[in-house]
Length: 433
Ligand code: URA
Ligand code: CA
Image 1 (cartoon, rainbow, N blue to C red):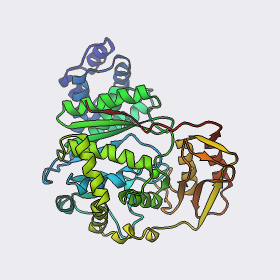
Image 2 (cartoon, protein in one colour):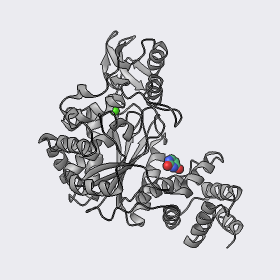
Image 3 (spheres, rainbow, N blue to C red):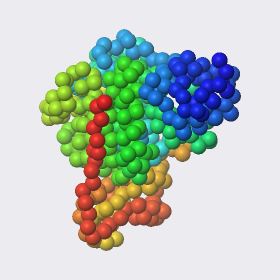
């Protein structure tokens, strides 16, 4: 087989065989096939697309390019959730204990990552004592007993994707549905998921800005999952404004606890119930979404969801009593309200810009070496569609510095108040096939 023949075949709009896809992914991973040939093929894929068989083959070739996590010692269908990213996205913190409470095993491998706030692990580390440095044996034991545990990233997962994503980034080939879909799905499958639920975000704070693009990506990923034997569903949700009210690390843990108690923000609660219902269905614990939803609502009402969170924290040496006393979480020195400059309706809260403001306070990291401040962040009091009077607090800034004029300015620029406002749509679509 020759790489140049594969490039020409795709350039001319023909479908590649599984053998050809395996050949180029294995050769590229090993370093036998150079970047310039793979970038040429990526550009051909960008213009000529891939059919369902090619997309499935590409996904599995990337899965098999490195380690695959073996969760076969965990009983039941292991469901993983993936979000294409957003600002103040507290869903994982709520979903993990919530679906575990109704019997769906959550074996979560998580990273720290860069961003406006820390990743899921950073957020959880705001709970005194909690850590993810547990052995694989202990991880398996905890998931079997308590249905939920989180472990730090281990193994060399999908090296082909790492290399290819890096190359796409500098060759104008990131924005290709078959390449994005296979990239995301390969990582979930390598991490051991039997079934997958996807939260594809759309809006100004998202990777996919338009609903049309988000829908195409969601369908592509659902089809790949189902074609490679992983039951997969997706939703398309809005990331025009931040999700929930809290953006920060400890602040989001507090928000998660409130949501598990049934007192969370409306949008976060709705998103969690929608995604959670899909997780319960693909996890085989309910026959349809309606039954799944009522199981989850019941777990919130009767306190088992909150108990599940407490047990999860305590199993990993965390202080579980935070679930009844959130003042045990790290708190910033100053709480500064930001008043509205005019009266009207909030019509826009630019998620990305608000995210940058929380980063300026120290909630996130720009480089891998940065420290993050778990106590700082923002709590929104007004969301898109809400009425405000001049002088009302739009949000509270939780800061360890007094001098935050630059943060205030950034926030005022990212929130628009107009005479008329509409309630935004949170969940645009539910995609089950
Ligand atoms: N996120 C990924 O993991 N891969 C892509 O290709 C794009 C976004
Ligand atoms: Ca939030």
